[in-house]
Image (cartoon, rainbow, N blue to C red):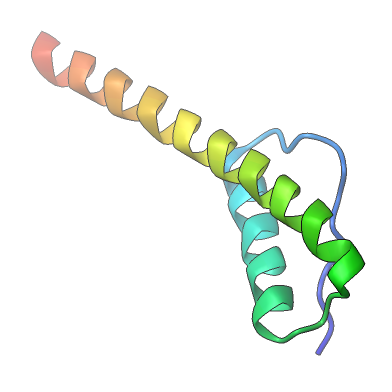
Length: 70
């Protein structure tokens, strides 16, 4: 099975961050990473989760504001 290489730059969109996070999870589930890579991937996954959470929180606030203005 082929997976995208893990990127090091910060994803610009929620979708990019979520897709990369899915790639990391699949590699972990399929034991396709070495113990040496595990720490780096966990750190990367943590960053991606934070990016996704921040975007969802911001979007929720924007939607709430729009609903209040209706």
